[in-house]
Image (cartoon, rainbow, N blue to C red):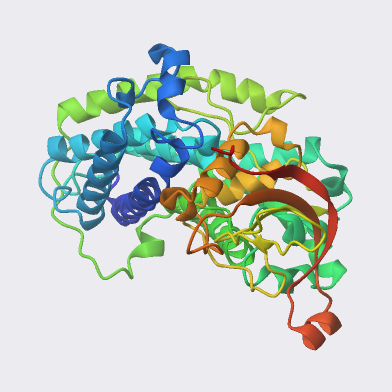
Length: 473
């Protein structure tokens, strides 16, 4: 097969623009969230992490200077480089300049992920880094796309989708009896405005949705490697499936990046309607060709562990086998929770706590709080604290070393930490006392929502964090 296929020029154009957009979203999240979560006074300070973990285990530029100034500067540089890649200012000119942009994007984001600890321990972080690393070899838009690189992207898409399908078959029995969607829309990490409607679809539709999920994740991925137009059809089915996930919930940029990867299955017959003209294409430079061959060998060698993991009965999901996050294993929702518990953080200005104390609740930007508040549309943006609150509700405060730090910062009235929340119920001065309680949330029925306007019902479950205050001086 010819190594250079001009018939995938539109595919590469869409892929690289989409990848740059996801990088941009990731770095915007860095600017908005990294310092209060992981900065010098963050909930899990990076300074402590780099003292305990060797560089070789988690390489990051910030081992040299783990300061808030460095984090902010790197975040803004990442935004600037993402905009350069998104606009294609350099991509139409020079392969070396293009490679430098993609290299710096990958290196900067890798540096954040590798010190991000639990706040960056999500599969889509590794997926972005993997796709970003491969794209360093993509070259300028004035050269024809590489067939080898296109196959590497499709192999990544295959591992992502097929791994997700296998983990479901091996995991929760509700995937096998087709009932997982009876619970998923209500108990997913951060429901969106349409999740309530999806939850109340007829059960036959929901069970059919699980069957369609198995088809898309276990059968369709093999189509990525078929000749056209079958590969493109498989890609379009994947895109349609991801769009249903996008409109029914908030899964950060996972679904969006999956769509970006699926673009690589589409040749010009699917995309020639785009209002962009293909330039006169030059032969691929020999240095770039050699780099792609070397990359192919690296991917082949690093694929052994993820492939064995996929075939293993004890398959792990969302795991990196090397600190550079190249060729990872993926998977999502191997188990689906049946009930939704949420942590509500409450404070009071009373000097002493009594049975008559009035507690005011902190509201989060994405996760459920006030039962009358409509669920938010957040994705593809990622609210890291909100996601960790969802995980924390499945265990105890002792399991989450960052949670006590969160309570302390709220007692101090720390502006950066409060900026992670939707509002501040104590605008004049911080609360005297604070606590965290657990509530069981369920979607209201159609009749309940019509009568009350609420999206959720909630009932108290118990204490998550005891009533505390700052030490007396």
